[in-house]
Structure formats: structure tokens, C-alpha cells
Image (cartoon, rainbow, N blue to C red; front, side):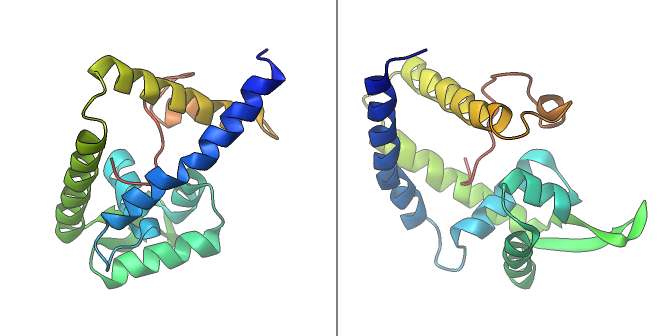
Length: 170
């Protein structure tokens, strides 16, 4: 276990990550707020899914998820269709316009990080990705209730891998 001072410094550093988040927000088109961008990113990464699964991946409640989905549907970025297994449920999927916007968001995100991390090596960026993924997993799996059985496998990763959820496109 790390020393208390290390945890205090970690808290300070994570508070400062707000500058990175603000940078990500600034690169988004005005018609695509962060919540919508995250919905597109998750559908792009994991494919079509029910809104309940999307809410789980977003780690927010259904009403928040529904607002993000409605905005994306109204802008033509995603579509809802009947779930063949349960006609009461809807399946969400990206539209061609949503795929095009997601490609643009990914380009903007990549360009922003490439510009701001120009003096970082590939190894350093990889280490950061690994550690951030591990940090997220620690909160997902060690928090109240722990990891759900099969959680990592269904999310496409096992244990502390580099395949991370994201709240922004990347």
C-alpha cells in the first residue's frame, strides 16, 4: 500500500486533470456536447446495444442516458430500432452521419493529444493509458459491489488491460 502522502498527491493530480477535460470539451463541435460524443464513442467501440447497457457503460442513470440518446437521435447520429429479442426494448446503433461525426471527433482528439504530448514517447503514452485503465478498473472492481461476474470479459478486456471505457471519443 502506498504512503498517505502519495494518495494525497494523486488526489491533487486528478483534480488538475480538469484542464485536460476542458481541452477535450473545447475541440467538440458546438452541436455535439460531451455526453453525445461519449454515446457515439461507446457505440463505435462496442457496437449496437440497448440503452440499459449504454447507461451501464456511461456509469450514469437511465434518465441522463436517455437525454444524451435523444440529442443524438434528433441530430441523426444514432437510430433506435426494435430489439428482435424483446419488442419492448430498443437497440441503438450509429447512423452513417454518426460514424462520420465519430471519425471527425476521433481525429480531433488524436490531433489534440499529439499536439499537447509531442514531447512524450510512445512508451510514456502507453504507460499512461495502462495506468489510467488500471485506475478505472480499481474503482469499478473494488468499489461497492465489486466487479460483476464476467464484467471484464463482456467489456472486451480482462483484468487491468489497456482497453478502457471513455467518456470522450478517442
